[in-house]
Amino acid sequence: MNNTKRGIIILKEQIINQIAAGEVVQKPASVVKELTENAIDAQATTIDIVIQNAGKSLIQVIDDGQGIYPEDVSLAFERHATSKIYDINDIYDLYSYGFRGEALASIAAVSRVEMFTRPEDREIGSHALVENSKILKIEPAACPKGTNILVKDLFYSVPARRNFLKSDNVEMKNIWEEFYRIAIPNNNITFSLTDNNELKIKLLPTNLKQRIIEIFGKQYDSKLLYIEEEFQFATIKGFISNPTAAKKNRGNQYFYANGRYFRSPYFHQMIMKAYEGLIDKETFPAYVFFITLPPHKLDVNVHPSKIEIKFQDEHLIAATLNSLAKKALGISGLMPDIDFDAIPTHIFSINSSKSNYNFPKHPLTDTTQLFNQKINTQRDIINENYKDLFNEISLIENDSKIHYDNLEFQVIDNRILITKMKDGILVGDIEAILARLIFEQLSKNRNNINSESQQVLFPIIITIDSKFLGTFLSVQSTLESLGFKFEKISNNQFQAVGIPAHGYIKEEDIEDFVYQILELPETGAAININKLYISLALHGAKKQLMTLTPDSINNILSELFSLPDPQKGIGGKNNFIILSLNNLLQLIQSYE
Image 1 (tube, helix red, strand yellow):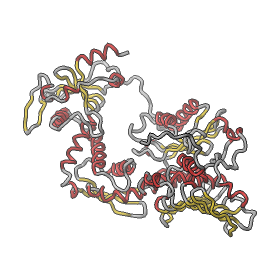
Image 2: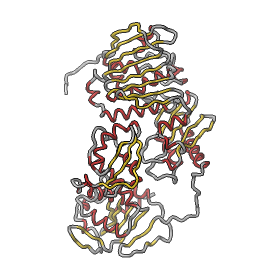
Image 3: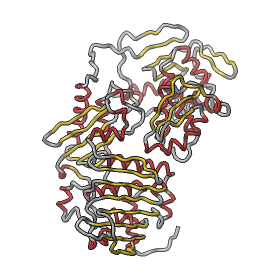
């Protein structure tokens, strides 16, 4: 570190622009977003996007919008130059996407930009070249009405930023996501996307539902429920999928405020609550919501890329979204009838030496919060010999494994295992334990698993979303090394003709598993084989949970405690904790 005392200076304009660009232009998808939104603000009816090398070499956006007058071309590349606002009050009456006047200036600060533009009432347009924030040329040029802007060699002037770009597959996936976000609400506009000289998609003007189906897939044609209600504070409309369309991947979920995409974990949670009891806990419905309200009722200027929005009536909107989703599901006859007299019988005791299940005479109270408390586990005990922890249990050692013949335990909701030990109790996560055992088995057979594949009875058709296609092709061989077998049908359709013979993946789960892999953050040019094993183990553990018996739980414990560090789960969390009697007494006395 340089300890030389340095005075305060005013940064050079070029450095200022590059710093500002870091907020607006984070990746190639950011450029696609900014340029496409500019085209929409210019009232374009056709927008063509051309990509080379995931946007690292070229991002080109061609529109037939209003164009830029020759006298304004140089201003368009200045920071804070905009045609959207003229005073501070205009910020609270915005209907356009852009307004800060930073996009072109930020993009030009970190790339080579070439632009052709012509307004409809001019016979001759303009041609501009800008590099590293410097305008090299502006000259008259013959060109079509609208704007054609080419962004070349993104981040060439800041190599450190370029080094942080992800693989082409990941960056292209981000571009597709931005494309979808913009194309959905603008169903009156023709969009196309060309990747490495191949036209990938062309969307023609259509109604909103059809635009959504074109992006989500034809399988949603009969699975979307329409919502529209007008309130004093806002108008809310959109589509939600019926429960049968729920998937294990989180895609196909969109919120819009006055046509602008935004993220909201709070709103998402309220939608998910409407589906409680209708879908599995680890699956997700598709939805698209459009919230229209006076611009002064929201603030879009809270995030550089404007994907976070503050609402004056946030809680009211959230509650309304939940109510509308429930209403749509109820009208469709999908909400279940609730029997308030039903007595829960999901907690039961098992004695492994007996075959009968002993249900409690009275329902046990909810102890979920009890185990959410922070408890100091006996980690010093964890490192001892495990067989010394159990009391009054017949232990038989065979092949370095411990067998539990008379172990009494409780299973709660087929998820939690509780058993008495010498100085307290062991509380285990059965699914985590199963996943650890499956992972160990897969790792043990790593050298033999490649050829183990079984043919499916009927080929399973899998449609790969365009944004995941490059990623799928890059990991296809790795998946096939595990026993999957795929055959290409069309550009983005494949049929699975083989699955791993170990049985951890069922035929009906192939598509969910493939998407689970494609959505891993690490999935890009290459994927660590251990990541696939972890996904297989997690998937297989969920299936095995449904077939538990007292004998199988005995076997699970025998297998677990034969492993090194049995407490460690494959996700880095615990398989179980051990609570001493003192721990339990302290917890009971401090529980409110």
